[in-house]
Image (tube, rainbow, N blue to C red; front, side, top):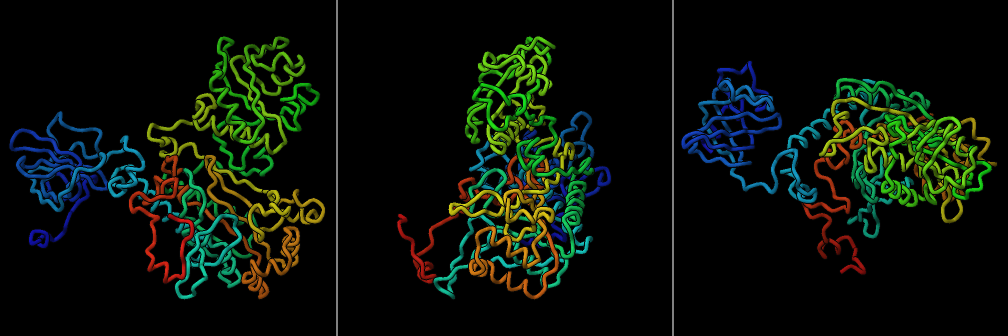
Length: 609
């Protein structure tokens, strides 16, 4: 303790930042021992690591310091002897010599190496997350996250937004996902919920005259987990008054482009805008990845009079997987094709037809498929022309209702682009062995697209009532309001999504501020005035006191950071995530609560062991 107290500064430099400017000066570094190498009886080399990198330290071989021990090293920075440089290190041309070593904390051997390329199971890494986070990749991800948040905040402030915090103990909101419930001790038998988002709170702030609000908000949804979803996640939420949809998209585009530029050094080449209908038609999804030229092709007219049942649906969609232009190349292997057929069924399709092109010269079409013998020459020629295929290509075809056909082919396209069925077949961008994309890490190959004109309603509930695609406060497209009474499923909304490389970054909409329009929407949804008052009373009550036209958006920070980091899962950009089963291996949560706590809350569990 006296030695520690005698230090005027715990360290004078970071390990990875040492260089020419520090040569022949005395410096002190602190960090973890990454490696120890013995060099005879009286000499040892310690690689000391902090979040900036590693520096080699030459110490007395008799001093005890093992892997992952925490140390403080003071020495003179010198050039390494000729021939001993390490080009793989940023500090590989220098080393600390004449070192004194102070052990700050001894350590047990870690459960896995603190290196980027490790084979440790994810559950083990999450159990020892404090060790996992020492790895350069994880340090880089969390610091990149901080930079992204800094950039997003700066953009909001510079565009006139005010940061306002909203409650985490809230009331149930109509956003579709299951909510986490928090029992109240003071009001026994009553509960709060954790907010799915600040949606209603931020609309109330617009009624309050805040004009432009934003918040880095923690949101919580009790949903099944996957690579791009956690129980708790972070959004940058924003809302603005006296705006239209283009205003919101312009504000958000500036914010996201700045963040991408701040991290990568370059903005995306362009930001596209596409309608929901066109996106479904061309890509089979409302989250299109535009980096690949592969698009859905409509073959409905080609097979309008076909006698082949598998191709006689109301909509026929196709995908072409390019070959190498050689008749000797047989296209996709039968093993992969069988897997694609099964995947199409899992996606809700009846199946998947396929045609491998052996020859496609004028007047001489040769297709390899179980269905070829049932097709007329005109049908084969028509498909070849519409798909613009050549020898070695493979055509995948689905026939079904329009939305089903689009979504099934969109799922097949996503599978091909992911590399599961062979990324080279789909001209998709590859990923490294560790799941990162070098293109993403270097800021290349970024595709930003706005998807607009979503349907206002999305199917019906069990009672036969229409369901809001976004939420019941979304403004209908002004050109379609007249269809609410006659053809509500055709009504478009003023909702919009921002998509980056096939991931939905976030969504938003212009909100309804006209009471008459709001009543029509509630009526179309089958909600009586009493039902509406019961579910949304406090918001509707606020709207009676003067509500400005307003709209907003929410960006998924975890997803944006994951894409910029080149990660395939948001778990790798969150400090302490849950597993896909919702379990926290580090803390053991969720856990049983003691009977005393349950009694204070007036609660008990039934049917639980």
